[in-house]
Length: 293
Length: 282
Image (cartoon, rainbow over all chains, first blue to last red; front, side, top):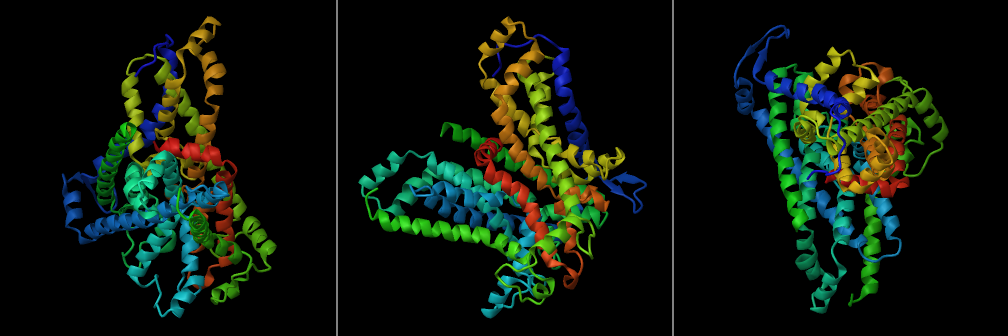
């Protein structure tokens, strides 16, 4: 698609795109290229010289059980966060879609957590569920749960999933509500006249019509769980106890920073890039489809 | 619809209020904790009702900071966050709108190549190229500077695509009319296109401000000096020390202060926020 009415100038447009082009080249392409190059290099301990080692960094990675665990863990986190947050948000959105008094107020009161930063989310939740001083930990102990996410890896993982899902509720709610409002009310009325009860109407009418939104949100939630959970993990558990909450992004960060293993960290970055490109590709394909839906 | 509407409506109200309570509870606890005495909290004796230390805690948080771990006034951290968020939001909108204008309203060599170069950046968040980006910023001597905080985060295509899409919908007649009036490309941009883009710019600004204010990993890496910390980084450093020394009321006051600006933006500018969110995600 192109505009018919245009200006005739060659110099001006070049000057207009120059700032963005410069920033993108310096802060995007150059580092991305460096990451790819570095992933084929092995640096000595002092970072003074490096040798070309072909795919050694990648092979090392895939032989490393810790990396494999991080992959599995990241996908598990993504899945758990997406499913719990999506289902809760969908329930709320279906309720808020009804013609209720104060529905605008409900929307306002449900969407603001979008604005809470991941590290703050981490701080809020670790404070409530802190083993020694958490307000909720008291009740958990009262129920006989031996609650200590700072020592128990599974509990730490549960805590991360809970906090991350909490933050994402508002986002999912907003998009579900928009999706629901886009469905013509006459469809529901027709189903009701046909005698379908509300639960049945939801599963046979609403849910299928909402499937593009669900799929879109699924991808967004997975990308969110991959990247934005970094702040939550870093303030709550720092990847611990042990490595039980280390995700792929957290590993790129900690291997590069603490381990100083830049070749491996770069190889991990490249693998992440490929994963994001695949996810984004899926999302684009889907958005195309939604237009024609 | 047909069946027992009354009861269903009550159920819906009830579920929504439960949802709101779940969503609000952690923040309520933070607000309550920020008004209490640290010794009480550290003993696990925290009350679920507000305490009487509101002014004292917030005064210390904003003007002094924690006495142990960071010793940096949170007021200063907020200023850093504000400068970074504004620089990201305004910078991104400014460079994107002019490059979108060039791509839509001109024909010049490599036009499509440049469009694709910008478009591809959409795919990769800063997290996947974090150390090489760090190295470049260090080589350019931009560590611990606002430019270093903001510039790498400006490098992305969302805003450019959005403006491009919008410009495509602007009728050609407008350009022809202003050409008849004798306006050149810059005049047309300034007098016609910019006023038309106002709502789009505002919606984008709201989203970018929130995203900028909430940045974490990048500022964490490139700020080493305490006085350059953003509030998100500062709050993490406050809980680094061993648990016994964490000054929880101050940490929680900082959390509340960190939430305040972006939450205010979402609530006060809800229409623009929703519009911006829906548009940037498409």
